[in-house]
Length: 272
Image 1 (cartoon, rainbow, N blue to C red):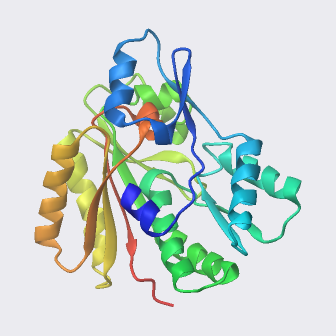
Image 2: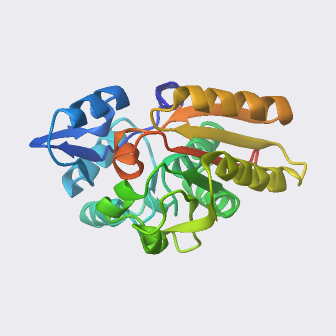
């Protein structure tokens, strides 16, 4: 969210959303504007990764500001070419002090890792220390999400192991997640959205049974009231954990559609 980006001076490399003949950086487009524009065009939106040049420009700009090292955290390489493009930019610059990290996830699965890394950087950890901690935190970061329809994921080619469900299930609300390979897959098939949410809650409860404090992100696409209800329920049931609501941006919205909901969480602070 903009407050965290500002607080920790996180540099953003924006993916783009293509709507009709127009292309917008995600950072330039609110979800409300995005969906309003979709209604006015025929066809659908698509997304595209940043160019190598935009990565080079961002990296050079950070060094020009006086930074010594860069930890660059990105979408799972199995669903986007962004990670590979970042590697290409690093090779072009020929600099060993740029470190490219594959989150193996998306949305707040990626976002929680970026947030943690920014806190560690502020504490004075160097890049190698941050990367070591990120690797450990990545293994304990979980993301589950529920979509109203698989149509958007299918259309965008991001559906991975969930592709077998498309066109065959009308009332099923599959719980999706990123598997160990960083591919979107089906965690479980559930008959209703409410049951799907309850199943996701059970995964959170299993994680919280460790009695470690957790950072929990409630994620939504154009479903703010539902997200507020979920956050309030979790806050009431699990006091002592950090719970925040985040709205996924237009790139995620393109692939999951409106009314998608998710939970991302991991132990925080990380125990060494």
